[in-house]
Amino acid sequence: MNESKAGSPRTEMESPSTPPLPSMPGFDYPIAWEKLLWDNGQKTSWVLRPKDFEPLLDDPDVIRRNAQDDYMPYWAQVWAGSFVLADLLASHLWPKRLAVLEIGCGLGLAGLAALSLGMNVDFTDYEPLAVDFALQSALANGFNPDQFSGYVLDYRKPINRQYPLILGGEVLYEAVLVRSVCGLLQKMLAPAGEAWLADPYRRACDRLDEILAEFQLSCECRESSSLTNRGERVRGYVRVIKHLRNGIPE
Picture (tube, rainbow, N blue to C red):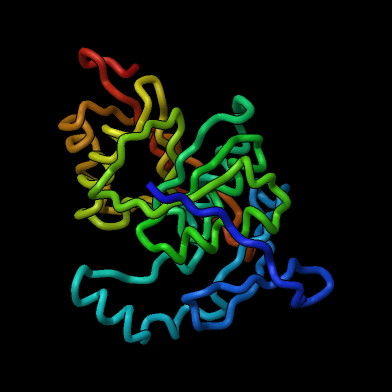
């Protein structure tokens, strides 16, 4: 399996207060740094993002991939569930250097939060550009490159690697994804591990408990809320998922 590390940023400065803008091969649209507030405004992280989302929808490659596999460039925005997940993570104590997998990382806010809390993070996404953006953000926030890495991961094709903690911010936004994500968790969640998946009350999760049981997984829902970067209060569930052994959560 080929893993990627973020390269060195260029010296071009967006402004004296922001990190250098990196070169992003394969991405032809303007990019920008945004300072995100999380942990209800107590912590900040720099996140590299496309400057505008709407032009991506008309990109010929996006249109082609959408026709082939219903692809949409959802990775290019920070979703409300990522704030809810980051904030709940910050309310717990975690072992230092705990190995964490972020699935569907998008711009990587949940993974950046885990890094800030002392964990080691693998950023993964179906979209290679999402992984590249998240890695650049990890570098810009001053984390040691030995603390993070990234690779492309399709929910439908889990790999033979297990993690004690798996994170996902709004990865269950369509019903068709629920079974694929459950299959990935069954294979990649360590026997005594936990998966924390956040969603703002999405209907796609209506049958989640039933599908989890098919994969010998259980779920505990924790309701939480967070302030977004724009000061908006968002609420949702963080679903803590574990393996079942003899019908009992491990």
